[in-house]
Length: 441
Ligand SMILES: [Zn+2]
Image 1 (spheres, rainbow, N blue to C red):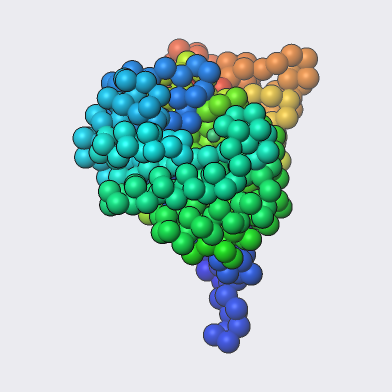
Image 2: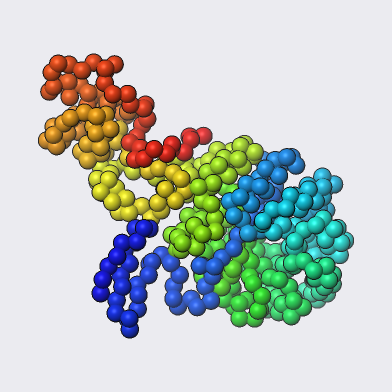
């Protein structure tokens, strides 16, 4: 048995040929033989689901800017608001179809012939059709029974197919629909030849085990691809998306920052974080991750929100390490406390050293950055002084630098005036490479 270090920081263990090769423990489970964790696709719905976010109002210019950015990022599909929503929505849809993007353009409609006829005229590459199947929607929304739904679905699907474009059929509120009804309608539309079927957790009620069971069952009755749409009301959207892929779904609906109805759906960035931990090579080969921060900033600005502090990848402290014991290990080997490599996203990691939780390794790193000469014992002593002050009040970078410089000056003569010292950026943390940290919003 031998070991090699891979670039992603995982230890790869190679055993004799007849034995199993141990792979990334965060990757697909070999028992999930239908898993698409290493072959998933993104249906990016910032310009459809995202337009349903409370703050969203996208002009055509902004839609084009976002569509181009999503395309550049590598989104497989871009889903647009129904052309039936408004006259401008129809014009926007046509304009985006004419951009000639690499991503396939979809629009999203009700399961009605009047919708389908307008949708296919916009120039889209495919149409996503949705109809409510839960008892709530059947009773309080459209008021139709399952036989009506099946009849309407067949008519709409055959019409769209006749136009030679992709067609997805999805139930709405799938997890509160009758399982027998669901499987029957999916079997029917699969036989007619839809490109894919969709399940939608419209109210965000599903948990990962329920998702696994439903997708696995659905996979056993249809031959087409399965798409998933998860709302985040109970915080499970990313976990549910990943689990759906494990169970055999292939496509996940996302939006930038997760914007959508209520508190939204699976966020693109968060899903990328989950997926790169599972299969770094696949994710890096398909998606330009270093464009994620700009993409999020573009959308955040357009809908007037801040990037949340705890956002995966781009939250301002996503790669900031504070506790002394963490800092020591991070300085020795970042993989000790990081599952994601900030460099994959064009970002940097930081050691936050201006607090009473700091340790002498972090201070040593700062001393080196300040170009000062102290022995390890001296650094341990100055660290004690920093911690003493940190017990009394919050510290900032200037406090720590002043303590270090005063300490250094006491030891070395002649005294070095602060203005004569090396020029140091006024940052709160040690930046471990030259890339700027994410901007605080
Ligand atoms: Zn939705």
